[in-house]
Length: 399
Ligand SMILES: *Cc1c(COP(=O)(O)O)cnc(C)c1O
View 1: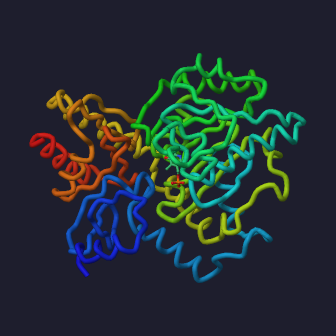
View 2: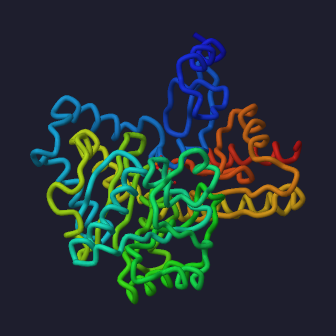
View 3: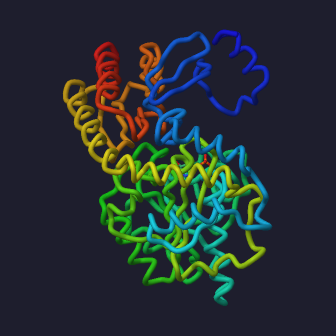
């Protein structure tokens, strides 16, 4: 079937909860994707910051197929070698102490919230149930993660949500300090608000939250689902602020396209979820863990963090010059590493730019309605990036 025929079937069979662009992708390699008509695309969306090492990287394919032929799942009734090896590597990489494995960002954030509440309960402070979150944040779609997501449009029709959540403006430490009470269990924050439009706070913001949490005994929960695993040019985006969170969530790039999520916890808080208090039947199964371990090895072998930083600076610079040519169309260039966005000026919609890019066989994504987001593979090379940027320049020229 061709694109159009597949789309007819897709509209009939898939629930309409996602607003999808009219493209049926059937194959990928590196930073290239092919649709059902055989058209080739340059992928600067990277599956929304997921395909960290591009599509179908031979190392990922090999690990997946080897592990699929060895052991895929046994449940958490037992240990598996792969989950242990991956958890060990992840604690070494983060400098944190212990790991909980799951499948997605929302699930990893559920684990953060439950860890914080249960930690205080275990420590005879059961009334510490409040969570402080930020306006315009995004932490996922399950009800707990949604409850700390500060975007009313996602709450509509889904209430009642989790009680005792207080939202404060992002990058406003005074507002956060004023919101913390003796009942506060935790603060949850993104180092960069990615879905919220790629809002990059100064590095002092996370450091100030760290100090506030130290003073008040609230846990500092950092959502690195989109920013972690090298995306911003550091392994953890909170390394830009030189701080350690009490617990951190990962997903997206951690499995490079295979569903995987994790919570990693700092030493004082590792007793927060004693046996029986939280689990996931398939979370951290050996297939997923083997992929996660290979991704970590590739980050080291291929120097992906350094590459993300250098390539990201290049991309940011090129986008800034584009803004220089089109100040009436582009209001701001925001981002760090290979998480970059073009904020559009009044009168322009990001969806319109994406459609134009697609016409020229380049794929990017939206961050909010006003930001065109670029989150390519951390392995993308300069030639591919230049090819994509030439198209972006052409599209803005004609807009
Ligand atoms: C994407 C995202 C999530 C949700 O991850 P899912 O895997 O879709 O559940 C949570 N937090 C942040 C910061 C994200 O970017």
